[in-house]
Length: 319
Image (cartoon, rainbow, N blue to C red):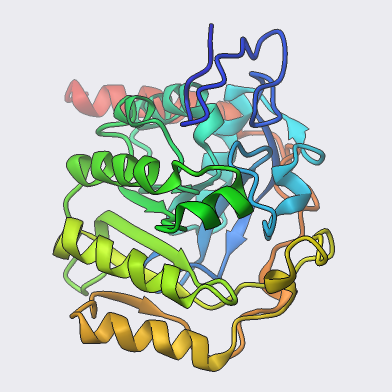
């Protein structure tokens, strides 16, 4: 089958060879654990159950998760194992299941979520992506994802080409976010926490304030209050970065740069979302991809799945 899950549309049969995502058709993950550094409505009090998938089709030169996005670290897992991980994260107190960089595994993830819901699994699912997804692939997830958490990195096509080899990124991200907004409208619980909806992330890059302002203007014009916006200042120059080729990326974002972007957001009425405070540009905010939660920690998850499925069937039948 020719793969067209992302906007690279490489057309590779990933059962035979790797695609532009650097992965075959077997799921690989590098970590499955509670994550405390997402937006407050995602992290909650117990933490987000983050599953970090190996590989990425976007390949940004400054990637904070470079260790796994290059497809060089992680373990292959089955759909059965992914289902078990859902339950294990719930047992640990996760507020949700946070699927990080999942685009190239949409078919497998879709089938596993359906199986989980058949058991009555009740945690919300978060789809956490770089924003370069195919709208057609996203359409197969309708009714399964509660919160979409895409990036919107660029309006500057030259910057998108330079840093992500994706000059069509602005158009592709717009199509992807439009599909997400079509699927889920903002819905809040009694405490004001987001239950369903779309949170668009934008990472401010050093020397690229103008790009950030253009992104905010575009999002405001196109989506208004249909989305929340998270403006991030946590860019960190990673060891793998080619500083000679990308000299502007060799430093953190200055306080003044970030303030300019936030001030513009407030000036145009973008007060529905999140800003970051303090020095978040630290590698400590990047998780260790140490395979935590990947290997089966204990027996019983598969049995629990069978039990939950039977219990849910009986409840539906009034038994």
